[in-house]
Amino acid sequence: MNGGQVDLDHRPVLRGIDLSIEPGEAVAVLGANGSGKSTLIRALLGLVPLSGGETFLYGRAPARFREWWRIGYVPQRLSVGGGVPTTIREVVASGRIARQRRLRPTRAADREATGRALAAVGMAHRASDPVQALSGGQQQRVLIARALAGEPDTFVMDEPTAGVDAESQTLLAETLSTLVDQGKTVLLVAHELGPLEPLITRAVVLRDGYVCHDGRPPRAVGTHALPGHDHVHPHGEEEPVSPLDWRPTS
Image (cartoon, rainbow, N blue to C red):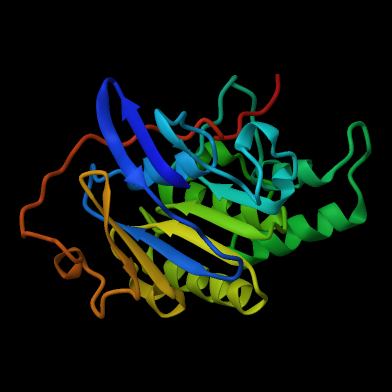
């Protein structure tokens, strides 16, 4: 992203952001509520229109980018609409769509990748359960599994540990650590990293829509340790749910 600016409801949210994520990096976007963290990653993916500047995905503008299988996106919430009962396996398997040719039946490789993803987040035993019956934390694990199933080059995660229990956070940290060791790229939004801290190689800290720190993560990554933190906690409105939330077809 070069000079990225975003205005929402006539209010500046991002102000002149220059940011480049290199292959193989594990980057955390940190900052207080309302600082623009989720808006930043959505703008990087082209999900939020820029009011200034430009952004590229693997060298192409989002409107011209076609290799979506290379990016696994985990939004904050799972949205399942239409009143159609949907199983956990079906949601996770939808992560393979970008790798499938139109009208081609599901292959053994797709089924195997779905199974591995379910096992990685500890949900294999519930694969046939309706996703609507899950708690918020369990749904977040399903979203992570959906991204894993696609076997992308880059994982973009919007607060993947929000509402997830400590055991699941540790499991996620182990999974992401393996991916980083394999050369995958990880970009995630967080308030605090917890078990994810050891795998993060770079922290981008936002404050009021500006980057106030870009470099090695602070030694303590709680909110009070963030560069520029003034010990005031403005809790702004929640940032909007991603438009990439998967919805089953009727």
